[in-house]
Amino acid sequence: MEHSVQINQTTISLLKGDITKIKADAIVNAANTSLLGGGGVDGAIHKAGGKSILEECMKIRERQGGCAVGEAVTTTAGNLPASYVIHTVGPVWNGGTNNEMEKLRSCYMNCLRLAAEHNVKSIAFPNISTGIYRFPKQLAADIALKAVADSLNRASTEQEPLEHITFVCFDDENFDIYRSKMTGL
Ligand code: AR6
Image 1 (spheres, rainbow, N blue to C red):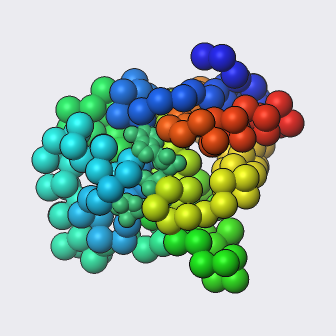
Image 2 (cartoon, rainbow, N blue to C red):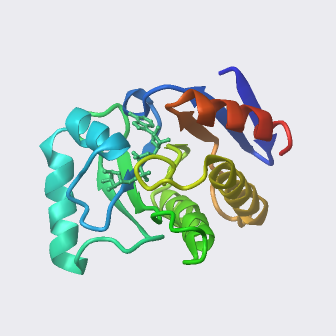
């Protein structure tokens, strides 16, 4: 781990690479409202994780009709070296006047809430919405880092602490942005 900062009992790290290779209790998927898979990180997670993830997503669809933007749902992780996949649906960037920023923050908050509910000790996030959904990367990184810092500073002392949060950047641009912003945490 090249870059890491500590907030209370949690280490926040930055990694460049493929989230499907990460051995965390939970990895986050940047899904869409259908939960049926797609391109980008979603495609990579379903491809590497195998069909059990899609089967669980289909059961969630039957129960609640998919997943709304800003919300998150949990499945197991199939063949991945993680225990859970937390699927969240980021906003499509539409100029910023459609509550995109609040919706992106709520993705991170809801993933952290589900992680706590499942007693997850380590979680890895991709850069939600910054690919196919075209969210500006600088702004998305500010929102992600602030959401995580706010959540950790607010965490109840009765709750078992999350030990490790990793931001997994796939592209150089996001990696460079996170590297420069993490020093400011
Ligand atoms: N590991 C980590 N990050 C990745 C990987 C990977 N294997 N592959 C891509 N990224 P995107 P979105 C990065 O497009 O913008 C799908 O079709 C990528 O560089 O995956 O939220 C869904 O089904 C980018 O920084 O997700 C939705 O329809 C980040 O992941 C839609 O795309 C997010 O890019 C969601 O779009």
